[in-house]
Figure 1 (tube, protein in one colour):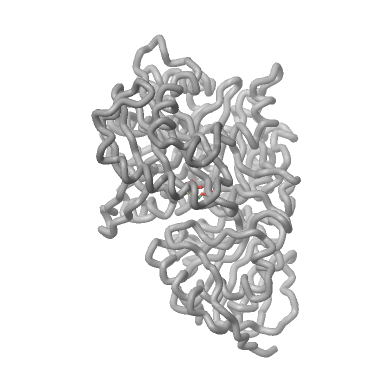
Figure 2 (cartoon, helix red, strand yellow):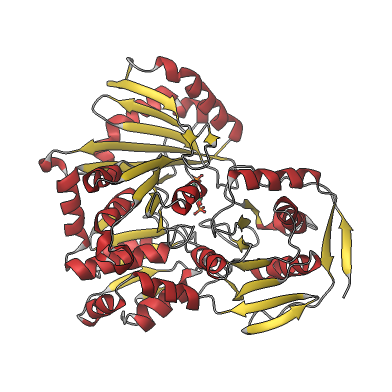
Length: 543
Ligand code: G16
């Protein structure tokens, strides 16, 4: 076997501050593109000589080919060991767990998350550090620098590794260890949750529908929910991972998981419904006729987590991303614990979790998690919900109604304007940024602005500062609108408009969110002049 040194050119790599590199699959398949990025990751993290890496992905098209390249490059770089999920599969939270459990030096996770998969869809690769979490801003900046200056990469000439057979083999001097992707993760879940109580719930006739959306959580959900906890066979739908996610969009929200929504709002709805995304870190929760927003789910889990064995001693604190609603803040206040507000992106929770300042955290973008790993974790959220349902004997609808009665309801909605021409989206944001200081005191569409700013975050642990994290406008009456450009799209720009309004009147806790938020939406559109500046007269997706 020989080490080939291949001359190459810089690539357009990952933007600092984003979660991994996401591009069209065909871009990743261009000669040297993947290799360049892998080499930049290796060089940006101090080389891989002597290191142990975890490697796996969500099973999308090109997953297996990319893993072969990564393994040959890791071997050429002198890595000691690569731990790989069987058939190349590892959900993002399971990869995070393996990095931590095996004290690996880091991991490479192949996924474009909730984006569609296939030769004409999206692919992605991200590096997670030794704590199991997404690379910090500092590390992504170093990797980015290397993508701009790279001139060569090294790769072993070798046959493919057999990814299907469990056990160890060697590739050059490196050990390749193929592991069951589910076993360690399932063992961790069993430590955190009262599996006996959940099994009893199912044995008593409790019904659920879990939509794995043809993505990586299928094998995990089938093994844990059906085989271990006794949910009826068929409770897990679309449970076989497929390279193009069955032609669907593996994003667990009411639009893309419409089949599940129809079931849960239909005449034969089961007691509980849930879905997760391409790489298994996002989740959607829906009760019988009761969709739960991610922000509300985080608040409910924070309020009731002590019912699960893993959290029986209570929470050290909680954290949410800035655009996430303030529902969890109100729960934290009543529990007497700290609540941190971070920029969008799971990596910002890493320091807080590592420092023991927070136990639970979550984001409006359907991510919830805890200090058990350093990624958001879709199936974990589903199991915590099940543990709470088993312990209380209440329905999802009742639990939510009680939460709102106790703390008020944060009506919440996110409006996405997708594939907007990037320069138009940028111009709209720039114009709005320039107006912020003058907004307070003015009224738009009949609503007075009380405050406006651009969110910046000072990390309380490493004291780094992250600026430019979203434009916020606060209205009279306590409502809020936030504008931000998505960092995860692969085509054009996506403008996200987040709308929120707190209601404490007990007679107004069961109303339609879009109606409740219409005045704030109208004011936000008037202030931003979004329609004229982008040519869009309505959002593409409302979640
Ligand atoms: C990624 C990050 C999340 C973040 C989301 C934001 O999610 O991991 O922490 O909330 O991006 O997406 P956007 O910038 O499009 O609003 P994922 O699930 O794609 O990895």
